[in-house]
Amino acid sequence: MAKSDLPREKTMRYSIVDGSLWAVMYYIGTRFLTPFAVALRAPIEIISALNASGSLMDGVGEKFIVHFSPFGWQRKKVTIFSVFLQSLCYLLLSLVAYLAWQGLDRGISGILLVALAALSFFFGGTANPPWIALMGDVVPSEKRASWFGFRSRIQNFVALAAVLCAGLVLGYAGREVLLGFALLFFFSFTARLAGAYFLGKHIDPHPGSRFTASGPAPGFRTFCIIQFLLYFTLTVGSPFIDVYYLGVLGIGYLNFSLLLLATLLIYSLSYYHWGRLIEHYGPRAVLVSSTALLPISILSVYFVTNAAEAQLANLIGTLAWGGVLLSTYMFVLDNVAPRMRSRATGDYSIYAAFGAFFGTLLGGALLSFFGTDASAFRLLFIITAVARILVPVAVHFLLKENVQPKKKSHPLVLMTKIVTIYPLMGLAHDFQNVAVYLSEKTRASRCK
Image (cartoon, rainbow, N blue to C red):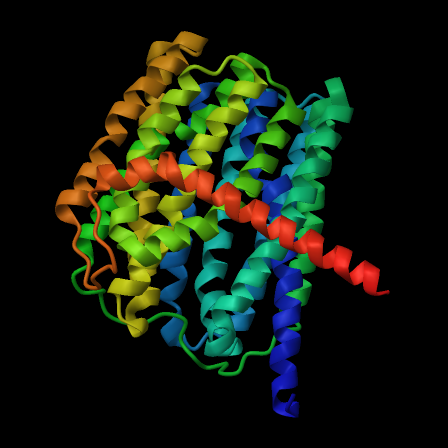
């Protein structure tokens, strides 16, 4: 390794540590904001505002910070400052949880939760564009895919441990669950603050570089509108599934943590197979088929009555959403020029943010009208399922792609393969990998 590569290699190692600390913050902090609202017995309007403001402020933060790029703000300093401010939000959330445990009015606690969560998402959004631009210059292009894949695997491993610990903390807290949330948010604060420290050890090869491309992304408006429709129909019901499981069915915080644990495992196992499908059939076809599974996933929640059934519904929803995320990302890579990708990502992110904002508000308004018993939530899930049918129809008839796929398949045929043949192939592939690993270990032990 040349001496000139050493700073880059160190920065890449520090980035893995920072990413792992972000996973701790997200999976014991951000993912437990709605459960905290449920523990506060907050009204559905507060929970709706919590989810709506979070999704919106993240997109607004991204769009806000890029306007300061022309003023010469250094990418590294912007990222560190944003992460530091985000960590302070979790420190204040920890204080709110502690004061609620001490007897602070639940209504005031709910309002403070919404405000601090919105600020946290905003500062998280302002950190993204400069960080993406910085790491794009640090990581060599020939290593980029493999390195980010390795970083994601480490993040998932850390996230699994974090989620399990969070469940144990809340389970052990018992009736003092608000104190448990105070501990979780404090751990989130320390993790994010430590992340800012390791970000400070990064190098910036081009400190004066801008962290976004200028100009609009041509021919991208249809995709952005579809993203708005996707997130609008998705969030009419999805943000309230946690409330349904915890507040109505009462599955408990440990079982809720096991749901998050299963989600991480499913993402890790399914991404490879979604990637193979995209290589063969192209991102558009997979986007049609995976979005067509979303109505089925929310309908499966309708039939959930206990924690075991919740795991099955979670399996269906996570598999579908994994395909949506990966095909969306690959569609951008395939159909947008490299110099325009930063701007294109920002464009569709803000459409998605506004879609999620209005969808969550509509879902909250419907629950306020229907009530908050089990039948009201189930009616909301049916409405969401019907609305989600619009998304694959829009993708199929409106979205065009520039790169022709290797194979062509009708979306219904491909969806049938996804829900029947490919899961069995995926299991066979995973079992084969395990068998090869075990045989190699056995051979190695015999050679010793």
